[in-house]
Image 1 (tube, rainbow, N blue to C red):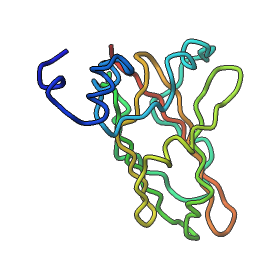
Image 2 (image 1 turned 45 degrees about the horizontal axis):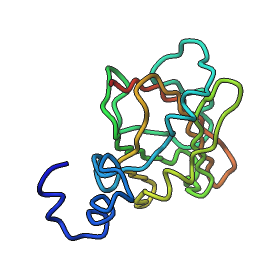
Image 3 (image 1 turned 30 degrees about the vertical axis):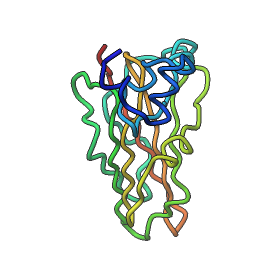
Image 4 (image 1 turned 180 degrees about the vertical axis):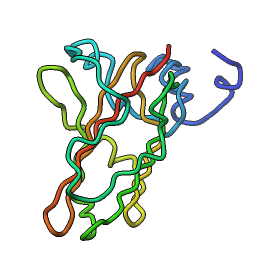
Length: 160
């Protein structure tokens, strides 16, 4: 453990010093959160190969993924910056659904992202999403006021 952590008198540092928490709990940024735990990742059944960014339904708002990049290996934690642009009607941010492909079924992780997100207009920014090393398949869906939906699949590779 670094000397600076021992001298730190914050509650987390005292908990580490007292042996109540592992020092590794503080190795990631303060804003980091588990988008998917290592246990959840280990239990998934990978599906076949898909492209990095695929739009499967496109009747509703446009989904623009500013970050993370969908090519090459990324480092966790990741920041998500996604914008939703109206076509015929305004996006309904409350209809946003973010799901993780576990192979046999999709896990709803919307609340995990939303809990750590800033929503400004039709844009959501969530910083510090921790994902285990490996390939990850997310699906984003959103509807507009006219009831039209767009669904986009996002495939990411997180390096060790």
